[in-house]
Amino acid sequence: MTMDIGGEAGDFAPESASTTTSASTTSPRLEAVAPRSYTPRAPRILKPSPYPAILGKGLLAAAKMSVARWDRALDNVREVQENTLLDITRHARNTEYGRRQDFAGVKSYAQFQTHVPVNNYDTFSPFIERMRKGEKNLIVPEFVRYFGNSSGSSQAGRQKFLPITERQIAHQRRAGADTLMRWLAHTNDDQFVRGFTLGLFPPTTMREEGPVLITSNPALMVTKIPAFTRPVYLPEDDIKVISSYEEKLDKIAERYLDWDVRAVAGTTCWFTLLFEKVIAAARKRDPGIRHVRDVWPNLRVLLGGGVSADPYMPIIRSLVGRNDITLVDSYNATEGGIYSTSDFATIAGKPERGMRMLPHRGTFFEFVALEDRDSPSPKRVPLWEVECDRSYSIVVTTVSGLYAYEIGDIVRFTSKSPLRIEFAGRLSGCLSVTQELTTHVEIERAVAYAIAKCPSHTVDFGASGDVGAGGTAKSRYALWVEFAEGQEPENMEAFATAFDEGLCQENRVYREHRIGDVAIMPPRVVSLVKGGARRFMDEVTRGNVQGKFPRIIDDARKAKLAAYARS
Image (tube, rainbow, N blue to C red; front, side):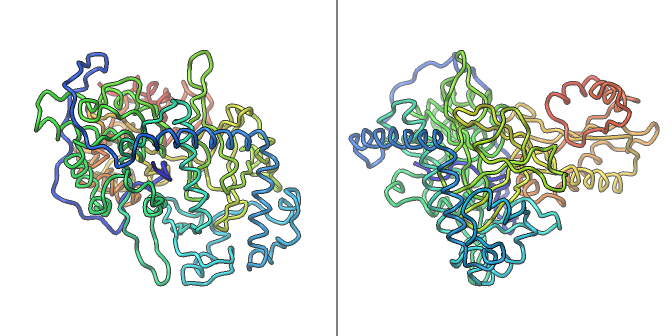
């Protein structure tokens, strides 16, 4: 059982200090075999968990109670959310920030809005800098030992170090359990505890900084797994601390072929890489192995998050060898933990959009409609007043001392009963294939770096992500660029290499995921025909002369842009 199943953007990367890697090569390319072609193999004896079968029935009963409690919270969302808010402000009323904003006078949500404006990281940065030196009673009364190093940056360009209190850790553990419990109740699975959960998370080593520890949220939560779940949670400690993901996945694939793995937890984009390695390792013993199900026949569920799952699921199903593999997705952040998760609701037999909100796990939610963000006094909407299919910036108040904090995500609600939410993008805009969250500014700087190294002149450009690049489970960037006539680089491959180098300089997570091609392959450059950029813009903006060529190109626009690529 895993207690924190998602990952904030960038959280699944090795720590930035760990930039060395073994001289390993990329995963061998494996032929994708359609699940329907599966032929059952002779039964294998797998190592079971130490837990008796009867425990599974108890866990299923607990899962049904957890789901009922969660649904009651959604039925009474205003009461639950207001109680959460008042608990947070009461706890911090005597802190330096609490006294400044008169938390003692906050008796309702309306008063909270009056006392606390919408904030960003730069508001809390002075307090956090002092907290990292050991001060307490600043934004929360207690000493905070853990700080999550976010992959994003503040408006002032500072690296983000987000406080993670013990209260937040406790809420995250419960929320992580909730996500699994809903799946157990949905499937009525009372045998889950007979196998193991395999977690793919960052190394559990933490960087000491005076009296505090700098880490990532998923890595921290791995160290906080309750004692009763540790016997069924893999990998073992010697693998957990490995910083090189190429080496870590190799070790996992080699060691656990004969273990009864029933769930894999981590960031969605890493599942395909693991499965390629598991099949390759198993084929060394048995060349007839075709799918992951030949190795782990009881694998039924993936506990993921961090990136959109849709592009990865066809590859995952092909590698696992079954169409009924379930992905329990989640939307979460270091700022507060898990916000929502898959609930398996359907309409006319098709999955509903979005994920079910968790209103009772220590985070108070507000939302600002995108069209109101730039107004002098933007209207703040509580969770119980949101509207469906309207784009909002999400604002959170957490038990770790962030109050009315705008995290930079754009979300939409797909249902009000129950409340279901979907991630719709970043306020700054980003390109992300493995949670690297590359911004348009980083793309522009990387192109400028490439132009400096390979003299040329661009008319316009943008970048997209290719999932499953070159027939593998990995991804890469595609730079779509129209060069001025007669101003192309002499060597297009050198230009692509320079663009890659520029991205590595600009984005830490991209750089770490490029080491040894562990998750991101080298980018490709797609040259557009003369006038292609303008014609593309005329098509997507219906002739609006003020339309701007998108620096970050989504899949729908990528399909249109392909018509203007040189053959």
